[in-house]
Each structure stands twice: as structure tokens, then as C-alpha cells.
Length: 178
Image 1 (tube, rainbow, N blue to C red):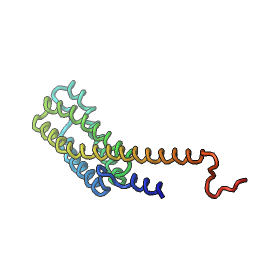
Image 2 (tube, rainbow, N blue to C red; image 1 turned 120 degrees about the vertical axis):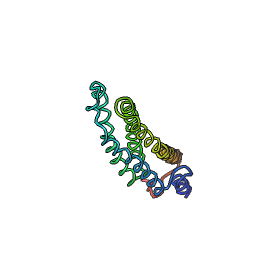
Image 3 (tube, rainbow, N blue to C red; image 1 turned 90 degrees about the vertical axis):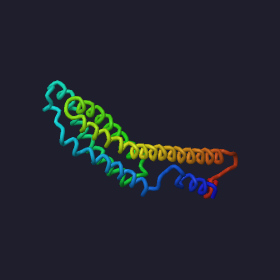
Image 4 (tube, rainbow, N blue to C red; image 1 turned 180 degrees about the horizontal axis):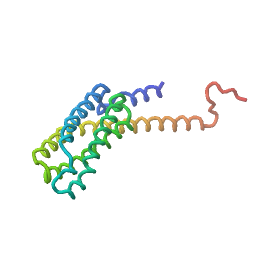
């Protein structure tokens, strides 16, 4: 009975872990924010910039940011389906961070070689997504802390059971003395 109470307490949603519906809503907000940058990518083509060497430098960032946007969409959809999965959340965060880095580098080139106003729009869209991204990061951190606590409770209970079974004269229930 004690084991069941401990496990129930450990598995119950903790103060920091968002309910699934709220986590889904948060991921949807991030996805909505990220979707705003896709039309901006369509206005770019660094290979056509006046400074061809700059275009050659920034083209991989442009293509990488476009590819990473698609990866964010895919991992975001998976995380929306399973917001309690730590690995899916981490994958989503890694993709978001990679996108943020690529867009930040690309924005510098846009500002210098194409259009400062477009760079400002791109930066503003990424700043808008940042608060949602930080909330997702906190949710994933809270999930990790919860999983760690669950593992600790299970490990402690296993240790307690082993110690009880190792006591002289203790036999498991249902064991015949043969």
C-alpha cells in the first residue's frame, strides 16, 4: 500500500509540469510564431546579392534556415501529439535553437547586403517566438525533473524491496519453502 501511495504521489503532475493541453497550446504558439518567418525567406536569395562572395557565404544559412523551419514544423507536430515525451521535447528545442542561430546569422547578412528593414522584421519575428520558446524550454526542464524524481522513487523502492528480501528468514509471499 505504501508503494502505491509513493508512486501515485511521484507520478501526479507536479507544480511545474504543464498539463498536456496547456503544453500543446504552448507548442502551437511557437509554431504560429515560426510560421511568420517563412514568407520572409521567400523574399531572399543571397546568391543574387550584389556582393557575390557575401551571397556565397550566406546562401548556406538561408537554405539551412529554410530546412530547419521544416524540421521545427515536423518535431513540433510530434511534440504536440506527445507533450509528455522528454525526448520529443528535447528534439523540438534543439531544432528551435538551431533555427534561431541560423536566422540570427542570416539576418546579419540581410541587414548588410539586402534590406535592413527585412532584417528587422525577421529579428522581430524571432524575438516574438523567444518567449514561447523559453516557456517550452521550461516545460521540458520540468519534464526532465519529474522523470528524474520518478526514477529516484522507483530506485529507492527497489532498494527497499531488495533489503527486505535480503533479511534472514524473509521469504516472498507465495513462495513455497522448497
